[in-house]
Each structure stands twice: as C-alpha cells, then as structure tokens.
Image (cartoon, rainbow, N blue to C red; front, side, top):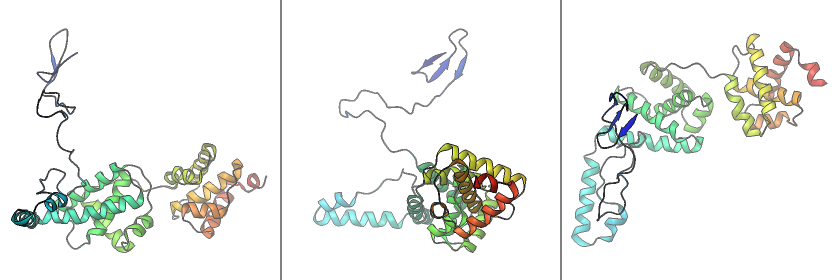
Length: 284
C-alpha cells in the first residue's frame, strides 16, 4: 500500500485500487509560514465535558481586560456581559451541570474518559428533555454511575450518593428513568468487580486477589450472592482469602478499606465459610 499525502488516499501498489480516500490528518500542519514559528494545528480538541465543547470564542479574559483603561475597558466589559446573556439556556444548564461533574469526578478520582462519557450521556438526556422535573445533581450523578458501568469501573450506589449529596431515593428514580429512556442496558455490578479495587487499596498480593475471586465464583454456584450487597461479599471474600494465603489482614483493616461494617463482614464470612466448608482450612 502507498499512502499519498497530497491526495489523502491509500492506494494499492500493484493494481492501483484506492483503498481509502479523503483521509483526515490529525497531526501537525507542516505548511511553511514565516510569520508563525509554531506550525502545530491551532485550537484545543472538542470536549463533551465543556458547555461550549471548547469551540466558543471568548471576548477577552479578566487579566487582559484589566490591563485596559478608561472607555475601552468599559466597552469590553459590556460586550462580555452581553455575550454571557445571549448564551442559550441549554448552554447555561450545561455549564452548571458540568461544574458539578468536574467536582464529583475529582472527588471520586475518575479518569478523563469517564468524565467525557458522563458528559455525553448528560447531553443526550438534555436533548431528549429528560431533565425536567429532576434536579441537575441527580441527573449528573446518574450519568456518572452509567459511565462507570460502561467502563467496568465499580462504583457503589451509596458511594455515588454520598459524594454527590443526592438522596438515594431521588438518585434511584432518576437513574432508572434516564437509563430506560436512553436505552442503557448493563449487567448489575457483582462482588467480583470490586475485588481488584479493594485488593489494590489494601496492598494485597495477586495470589490473595485470585483466591478471593475463586471464592466468590464458588459462592455464586451456591447462590449465596442472592439478595446480598456486593460490597459485603467482596469484603468477606478478601478476608477469607487473606486467611487462606497467609496474609496478615484483620476484619478492621478490611472494613476500613471497603467501607463495610465489621458485623456485615462477619455475617457474610460465616455464610460463605459454612457453604463452602472453609472453616477447617482457615483454622489450619
């Protein structure tokens, strides 16, 4: 294959068949310019998590306008105010929502990809008028929860509610409504999904992590996970795996890392150990 940069085509060397045409080059623009030494393409990439998607023109910054004096400064301040007033209602809603989104993402330590996906879902919800009758915070929280599920990043229901300060009842209603209207279908989060996160937080070895996953897989066959929270099951499995692999882990350490009470860990521990007959192995 030959890549013809001038015609933006990919051509077969033998038969001349055009495999691809009208290719877009996203790399630097190497056109010669005596006036501009920086030959990279201008402008930042489009971002869903910004109200204007990063393409809106701003009328001066505060620092630039502060340098001006007299009538010129007043003129630019007036233009700036008019520009803000003429912004569409949708854009103002997005700005308010994405300020919350950035704050929640920072507290939850979410990667940029999750923030962008949550912003994309919020835009779709706004376009379909799903925000009416619901608070912006609850819809943003629902979009974050859905984005985390899309990227297989386990985040608990109560964890999202606690950080976003949205009432669990409102969050549940909003999540079910928005996900149904957007056609969002994902499998429920299982206890196995939380094992890598909790094990990494506690600094456990891969052997202990693998053993915890093995215990949960066996527990699923006995249907121990039915009607029980994934956080508690994951915490109990980690504690049992630590005992079996010789890792020095206490119930208090597991409770602090998983944010599950020691009582819940003990209850799940007894259920799993009894069903899988692991008490003798742990004692040994």
